[in-house]
Image 1: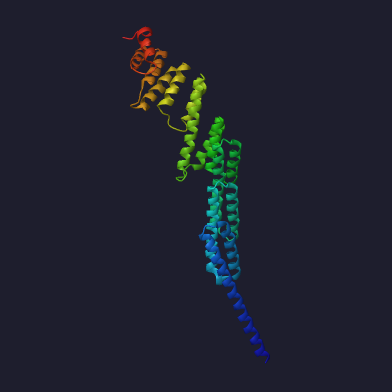
Image 2: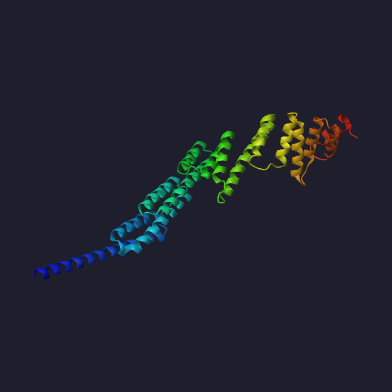
Length: 322
């Protein structure tokens, strides 16, 4: 009797355990279905906590709910990503970062290092995006703060380096601009994915220095202008106008051999375009260098534009060209 009684008790306990397990799996299933419906509806704000609850419930149940648990966890990681990106597109930058940081914590909790790394890679891009938005509004100090947040998350964030480069270009701090241009170029070196951004970083620096050189030339600061033009050439291939401006600067500094070299480069790059201005500056360079024969040749080539009369005067009255 005693043995029979023990067997009845064990049988009852097993039956009770199976009943509890079945009810729990059923509860996980219901929660899973509700959570997935929210996910499919792109209601990520509610889907995320529902999916987390599903995963936690499923983990407690164990193998019996393993498929639902795995599926819910996968949907949860996607929900964090989609929600974070959606908030970013709505320019809700702080909320976007908050969601993705919660995603990092959840991914690590569930042992999903791949998702954690993915979220961590997106966060600095959001800071950089916010910074660029502030940059467009000329809120430079606030923009710099966002770019620095991006670099705190990823010390090699090329978008943050480019953002700081653009800020300092706009502020006229070309030493700082070059510093961050170089950092952006270094960060993207050897990466086919970053090749376009590397070129953009070079272009930002090139145009900034080119413009600064033109402004200094207009002020009569030829030495500074030449320095800016030469710096620009470190970041891009100069065009005909840049070399023409360099020739003007060198002529003003009485460095006529360099003026001749720059003007000839300008002629080469001009192709089929209007070369009258270049001919005039090249003739002046030759004249300054004491090469009157070549000066006459190029003054005579000036057939149009504002320098026609000045060129004619040099040919007929000053050089008395034949």
